[in-house]
Every structure is written in structure tokens, then in C-alpha cells.
Length: 275
Ligand code: SAM
Image 1 (cartoon, rainbow, N blue to C red):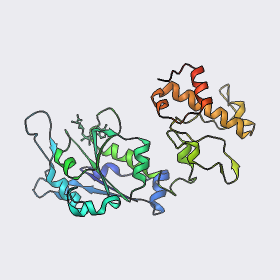
Image 2 (image 1 turned 180 degrees about the vertical axis):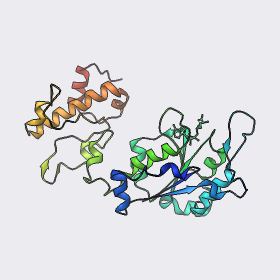
Image 3 (image 1 turned 90 degrees about the vertical axis):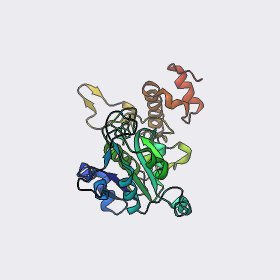
Image 4 (image 1 turned 135 degrees about the horizontal axis):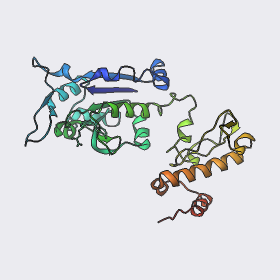
């Protein structure tokens, strides 16, 4: 899979993808990340990428021409062009990072992990001339309800979250399913290499708490149940913790989570009211 990031600050990314899983995925050839300096697609002495907004108001706006040229250099045509329509499912996903975008989530990350190329356009200043989104972008994505000074951090978040879902990138293929927002039980294998699983698929819930050695830290013992090797008990305990944590921190997720009758019973006992 290939990521192409269009930015006025390619240097922003130096070092950011050179650690851990993301570095390894590139070293193993599973993923490439390319940076494209927007100023390389200008033609004036000052390498101008921005201009004043029509209608007045604060700040500057990224001009459409350099962005269109940057996209053309990647073989990206306007959405209306027959070439792009023909490419259909194989076509790259062109994404504008924007505070006005739809929410970036684990399910969007999963969708993007299945495509061959993702092009990320990083805005700056007051944003990007709207016609770039209209003409070229498949989606606008926001990484949260706050305003960043540029799309670069958001692009890095998208690359990181998508990359780890690409088959082969995580050591254990199933890991992504067991994490927060992961797949439901019926979508994942019953056991791993013959060992009974000690966890349920997350099924849209948050992850359960994790503990490691020492068994007692600053007077607080790790939960006894995790030390006894009984996978069934561990599964039940972890499921209960997931439910409790999700109810406490993100009750909104319960609406769409895959809940069994015993999950619901537990949730009702701690104060959850299903609408
Ligand atoms: N005027 C814009 C608004 O009010 O929505 C904010 C522009 S922001 C200062 C500059 C750039 O940062 C945006 O064009 C976008 O690329 C990026 N950006 C800011 N917040 C973001 C967010 N929550 N998610 C994704 N990108 C964001």
C-alpha cells in the first residue's frame, strides 16, 4: 500500500514514521509513504501557495492550482474524468484533512486499509480552496473536534492508524480485532495457534485494562484472575472490564456495540439504560 502526502512542510514528517511498527512496515516493503512539497508545483519567484480569501476575512487560503498540479503529478484526475471513473474500486482514495470533515474512526481506517493508495492533502492557514475538495476529493476527514494549525499531524494520525491494519503489518493478524473498537467475536478465530483465546473480540467496545510484572506495584496487586491461567475466567473478567470501561468513558459506543444478553445484564446492573 502507498500513501502520498501533499504538504507545504514535507520536513514536518522527518522522523515521524521512523519508529516501531510503522518503520518496520516500510522496511518490509508492505507500505511506502511519499511526501510531495506543494511549493514544487508553483511557477512564481516566491513559490506562492496561498492567496487572500474572496469575500474578505481573516487569513489566507491555499490556492487550487498548485494542489491540482500536485495531484496531476500523482496521476490523479478530477472525479468527473472518465479515467478516474474507470479506475473505480482500484482508484486511489483522495482525502482532504479538514476540521470540517467527517470523523476519522477505526471503521474508516479499516476501509482505507483495503485500498492500494491513499492521497492525503494537508491544509494550512484558513484552509484549502473549496474547489479542490469538490473536484478531486473522495472524502474530507477530521481527526477530532478541535482546530489544528495544519493537516500534517492529522495526516500522520491517519497513516499510523491505517497502516497497522494492513495485513502483515501487526505481528499477530488478530491483534487489531482485540483492541478498542475492534471486530466482534464472530468475525475472529476461536483460538490462536491452538491456544484458547483469553479475550473476546472488542465488538466496538473499548479495550480492557492491561497488567504486567511486577504482580504488586506500589501496593496495588494485579487482578488475581489474570494470574491463574484459566482462559475462560480471564475472558469473562476482560469482557466485564471492557463493558465497565466503555460505560464509564464512552457510553455512546454501547449504542452500536455487539452486546450479548449477559453483557446487557451486567451493564444494567451498573446503571446503563438502553434507549
Ligand atoms: N478555517 C478552518 C476551520 O475553521 O475549519 C481551520 C483551518 S486550520 C487552521 C488549517 C488546516 O489544518 C486545515 O485546512 C486542515 O487541513 C487542518 N486541520 C485543522 N484541524 C483539523 C482536524 N481537526 N482534523 C483534520 N485536519 C485539521
